[in-house]
Image 1 (cartoon, rainbow, N blue to C red):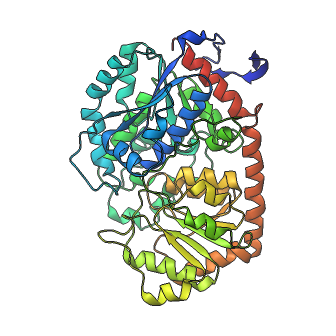
Image 2: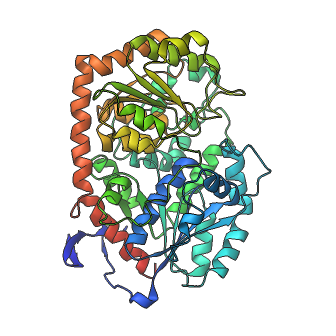
Image 3: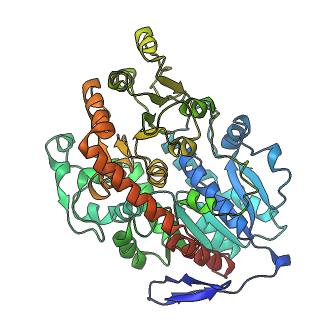
Amino acid sequence: MSAMVKGRKVHHAWNRKGEKDMDSKRVEAHDKPHAICVPLPVQSHIKAMLKFSKLLHQKGFHITFVNTEFNHKRFIKSNIGAGDSLDGFSDFQFQTIPDGLPPSDPNATQCFLSLCDSIAKNMLSPFSDLLTNLNNPPVTCIVSDPYMTFTITAAEKLGVPIVMLFTVSACTVMLCNELSTARDKGLIPLKDESFLTNGYLETTVDWIPGLKGIRLRDFPSFIRTTDPNNVIIKIVMEVMEKAAKASGVVIHTFDALEREVLGALSPMFPRVYAIGPLQLLLNHLPVEPLKSVGYSLWKEEDDCLQWLDSKTPNSVIYVNFGSIAVMTQQQLLEFAWGLANTNFPFLLIIRPDLVVGQSAVFPPEFLLETKERGVIATWCRQEEVLKHPAVGAFLTHCGWNSIIESLSAGVPLICCPFFGDQQTNCRYACNEWSVGIEIDNNARGMEVEKIVRELMEGENGKKIKNKVLEWKKLAEEATDPNGSSSRNLENVVNLLLSKG
């Protein structure tokens, strides 16, 4: 079903009753809509929310992006444009609220459990005060990360529509939504610790809508607990319950990638919109005045891009374990030596807090052996790296941003999940979308070497490369001006311009 908006067709979202939801009314220029955008204060969620905010800004919204004070200081320190370079943008501003946590290492990600606890207890009041003071122009809508559950209360009080932006896959959203059923069926929590190793996690779960052949081990890792009062499970259940009260939900994905599960999610929320990959949508903008505003909480090193220029196409292995995952020094060395023994050039990202309790240390013989073909950096512009023709494979922790960025660039994956939704992403990347090979994060160097070689020069690697290029094409089609993600973005704009 479609309708004309600004001279072209757009597809309608559907509500729980199966009725069309479309408000094509456009506000006058002097009544510019004002969207408050609130990410979960961690790197990957901030990045996705900021991309979405830029898209709304291009659609004519005045944007106020709400960082925590802690993260905003990191933004400025990283010289990514959240300070002086925004002076020229009267209709895109950053504001801050306190996170309620004690001071911590400014170069490290904050404790997630402490952050979630503080979100629930401390953030509603300062956020409400901020909304009261933001009246030029008046606040007309809120776009929130679902983990920032207090925003639902604030939107209800203000009487404005609120959209929740899920920065995870639709598969993960569905699994999180079914946690209460899994608990009621007695599948979680685990009966005792032996269930982690006795094969129980291989149990197939066949009752989840839109998901076939899923196993308990493919659920987000926080289900691997024996505690009936597990804090993370309780938080996620509350997140899903609150998200169902929003005016609609956006999932950073695209229809072709997760069509079946997106269809199954539609009756569970007022409106569901698949909008992504976000960067590909941004690439279609004729002019992006906010291009100077980056996304990183760490200083990005651009020397590695120049180094990539010197390498032949599809020859480099890019390795990045994301913004939160941590490992032991021994785990890191196994991966490092595995890479070294392949003789392929590699770009290895080692952020300051990657190794538990210490700085990463590489033995002199490793540095000597790889000095001509290996680069180690603390952080980089990942999307620029992935789209560089020299990159032939991406060894990743399987965070959702990394998965969808790699699909967008047509780069095959070596999937090394650690926690959270990374297990789910790994399952789908390797088994359903056929774009990667799984490796355990405790793998020995010989196994690392074997899998890298398989992906870079084996027959299976060629099949995976062809498959990821197919998904790249579908992602590009979704983000074309008449693609599904572009149409869904128009639908969300109409929703945010409505009265909720």
